[in-house]
Image 1 (cartoon, rainbow, N blue to C red):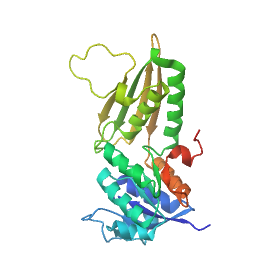
Image 2 (cartoon, rainbow, N blue to C red):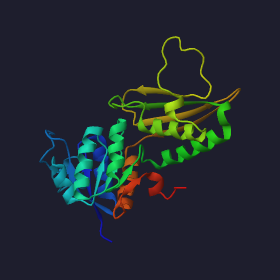
Image 3 (tube, rainbow, N blue to C red):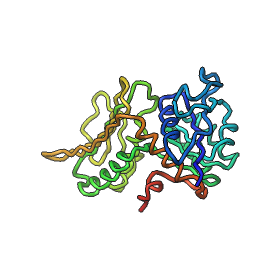
Length: 269
């Protein structure tokens, strides 16, 4: 089987560079295109300056051209850019892997609508360890029940622009669903001043930003006389990149639809 040709969006960013390295190192994939924003100082230069394994690929700024050169586009950028790349993939009938977070409801709906026409893997986190953490949170939520208060904490680098992180929200969604509720109904995203006692059944979120922390997440289950903490800490973006490359290989040749990492790893159901 021939290698899957990848287009990497946001090539000059830290995640883009990790994706270029992982895509070039994986024997099942090759880097066919490196895409960056118009005006990028790397536009027109060799992508080997960003990641050694991508040498020989010119950094481009035209989404349509990048998509045309590839089998699958991998996008970890920002919502507005992702939607532009999604439109290019839909026009060309090409699959897309989306790791971008921070979408507004209407933007997320645009992704779901596009998935009726093309294959899309859309996930808040591509680290295998986080996927295991989600399963543990689901199990703990079901076993402990409403007698335990749930709090989700996350810490990321100072350049992250959305909060809570997509992974934190997913962890909260899993905990809420296991308890028969939703974040829309019971999520608490801000506390300041005289807030009163904690309302039973709510799921709280807290956020920290600073330094170059790649991503830490902890879900607390707080009961009477004890607490359980489920924690995941990321030490390298390579973990996310390798998961995304795995998703791209899995997605190539799939039928149109909206998939996530449970589908990629065969964990669905």
